[in-house]
Image 1 (cartoon, rainbow, N blue to C red):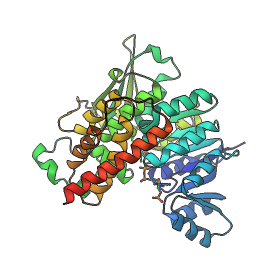
Image 2 (image 1 turned 180 degrees about the vertical axis):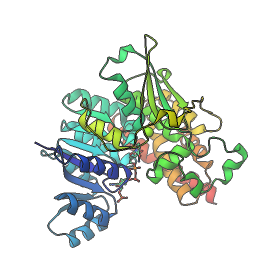
Image 3 (image 1 turned 30 degrees about the horizontal axis):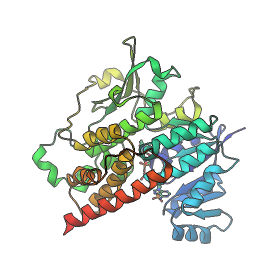
Length: 387
Ligand code: NDP
Ligand code: MG
């Protein structure tokens, strides 16, 4: 029996890599359903190639266009459509490659239907980590396997050992394109410069997050909720070559690392087949050729987003949801050339400052409400900059 996969974000970068894994293991995996936002032409091509019957286009007009072009497909739209795909009784694995907070409810629905979730959408855990953890306890058959390369590396290093044996998790970061740029030039960073990632090819939002190191900040919070470790046990180290994908230091002093070429097909495949390791056609690291594996401490002054993420994580409650939503709005504004690169951390701080100190017990409703408020505050900040 082939595993039936629902692929959310099929038209994006994680979508491409997931299809690349399915192509190599057609005997094991069958693409059952897909979702995307607006790119219905690409969704149609994927549906035709993989003979998918169910497609959700989040955008209603895109859904209409797809339906007109291919009336044999079952086409849905909006959050209801996404959620319905995740609860489908035929599906056993949901790959969540959506970008942003929109990925949260689909993840939760997949947990509630006891699916295996290969989770790339880190925003889910940042926005509503405690809610997802509670749901996982209630539905013990459900399992989240991280796809984010750092967390997948940690997952592999842990190899199901109890978390009590772990002293520290060390997330590696490439440091992005501005690791050595003089600080006075940060205000003039262009969109094109920020979109040039030195080692990975990814969607626009995560590429900007990598340039500001907010990506690593979000990943610190993601690690906290995925693995249930304290923030004091999560460290970040800058590693420009992106060969070591992360490390776990155990309480006996042993340090385990997972290494490989920077290709998301590796973490996606391990998430789909764990604990088995299957053949995969991709590059191989030639350590003698790499020669130098550099590792540096991160610079919190240069990258205030990383500091803000640690602070929001430690504060808990709604702070991570506020950080995440503000970041989404500000990154979109930067990509639209409405604000400068260094307005991103300023705007996030503006939103976090609006948070009162009472840390609430996070429920889904509270997280969604915080997400909404933060989007309003961040838009207000963008307007102030523009005026
Ligand atoms: P992309 O921008 O390349 O792709 C995003 C995908 O999500 C597209 O299919 C897009 O559809 C779809 N999408 C966006 N908004 C919606 C929506 N409202 N409803 C339904 N679908 C939507 O992003 P990436 O693939 O790079 O990243 C996806 C996630 O994976 C992010 O959370 C990112 O942080 C994480 N991740 C990505 C890595 C990578 O290598 N790319 C590495 C580690 C984590 P459309 O094409 O129609 O817009
Ligand atoms: Mg990552």
